[in-house]
Length: 110
Length: 116
Image (tube, rainbow over all chains, first blue to last red; front, side, top):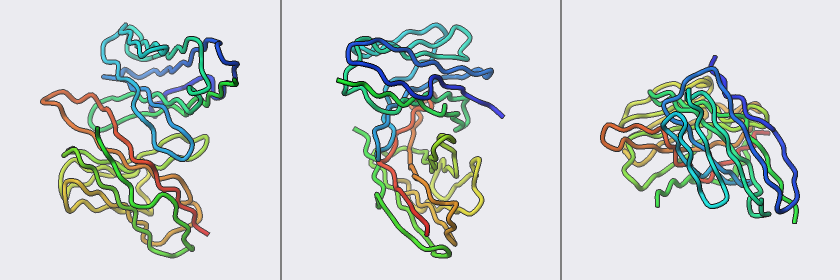
C-alpha cells in the first residue's frame, strides 16, 4: 500500500508566525499537488510540482519538491487568518492514481 | 475557470434508499472521479472514468456504481444506502494537456450525505 504521510495533523498559530507542513513517502511521484480546503467546500488546487528539487512560490507560500520526488514541503511566511484551512498534499503516480495525505488543519489566530 | 458542479450540497437519506449524486464539469475534461472524504481517512477513490461509458473501480467501489453517458456528466449511485456510507462525496475532473498528464484535479463543492 502506497502511503503519503503528512505532518503535523493540526497546527494552531498566531498571526505573523511562520510554519512548515511536510509530506513524506517511500514512493516516487511523477508530480505532486497541494490543495487547500475550507469547511464544507471541495479542495482547491494551489500548485503542482513536477521536477525533483523544484521550488515554487505563491505569494507567502513556498512549495518544494524533494530531489528524489518522494517528499514535499509547504512553508507559509507570516501567516494570516485567511490562511486558515485544511491543506492536503497529493502525490500522482500516473495512470489516474493519486495518493492523498491525511491533511494538515491550520488555524491562524488574529 | 474550471467549474465542477455537484447537484446536491446536503442530503439526508434513510437506510436502504437509492441515492443519486450528480456531477457536471464544463471544461471538456476527459477524466472524472468520485472520492469520499472521512475524518482521519483522507480522500479515497471510489470510481473513475476516462471516457464516455468507460468506468474503472477505485480503492473502495463496494456498495457504489457509476454512470457516464455524456462527457460532462458523471453520476454516483448508491443502490441501497447504508449508515457507513455517511460521508462527504467529492467529484473531480482532470485533463490531458497533449501528452502531459500532471494529475491535477479540479474538485466540486462536495455533497455531504447523511444516511439514517
